[in-house]
Image (cartoon, rainbow, N blue to C red; front, side):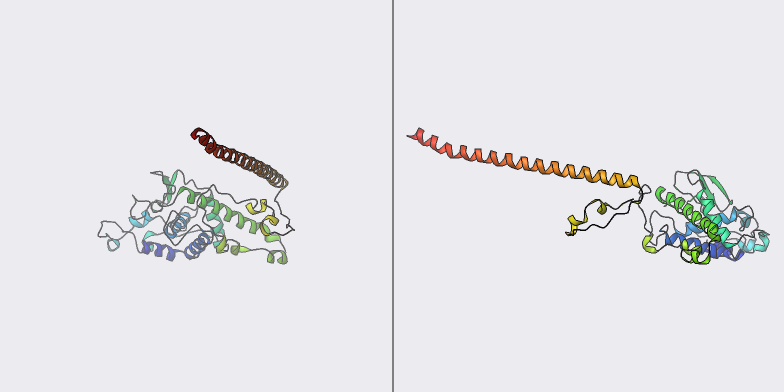
Amino acid sequence: MSELLYMFGELDPRVRPLTFSIRRWAQSCGLTNPSPGRWISNFSLSCLVMYFLQQLRQPILPSISAMVKTAASTDIRITEDGINCTFARDMERVSFASRNTSSLSELLLQFFEFYSQFDFHNRAISLNEARALSKPDHSAMYIVNPLEQLLNVSKNVSLEECERLRIEVRNAAWILESEVENSTLTEQERNEQSWGLLNLFKHPEKAVIRPNMFFKPRMVEVSDLFEKSQLNGSTTTPPINYKNATMRQQVQSIKAATRNELKQLRESSTATSSSSSSSSSSTTVTATAMPTAKSKRNR
């Protein structure tokens, strides 16, 4: 498999820098992780890049099946486990020539746009056939293993991580499209903003792996719901900047409801303590009266 990926990289000078850029982007936004888990691996991500380059209207890479059909006798490779790794090592035999003239930046944007619309729910990715197939099982993402076609190289990817991939590629496409629209800005305005590919590579501290795709960013921090003076004893509270008037009204309603609940809790606790003290005093009177009654009976 390493040999096959190496040959793909040698076939066109755009393959390696595109793959590197996408893998670096995935790392910066937390899609990949050095530890094994439910997230997409670098190998699966590389397969996504290879498939994208195969399915273009003007393909940049050939299908693996075309390389297998044109293999010579010297290209036959069978592993000890019986895995057939036979494919043409001489690309001139494949007689494949790409007519695609897209630049790297154009291919990068097309990659994000393609996978933001790809049907991962129903379709499987096949580098052997260079086309999407019907998914044979209910895995969140299905990438056919090029050498062992009964296996899924992305079997570990969870539904949440697959959805995160769709969200991140959609966001990346929007960022790059915004850069194209902002090309009319002055040089000073562009210098004040993040520009170009650097806008895709977020700060590593911001790349947080969310365990659930239903988590949403908070519109206001929980600590902002409480008075600062109650926490640190200060008399001045810095103003809170809300995103809209509706959120401000909701926060004020929450504060009012919280104050009422606290007031009711204090009243109920006071009433409970008063009743408990009265009951304890009556118990004491009864206890002191009992020995007197016994002494009268003894007499």
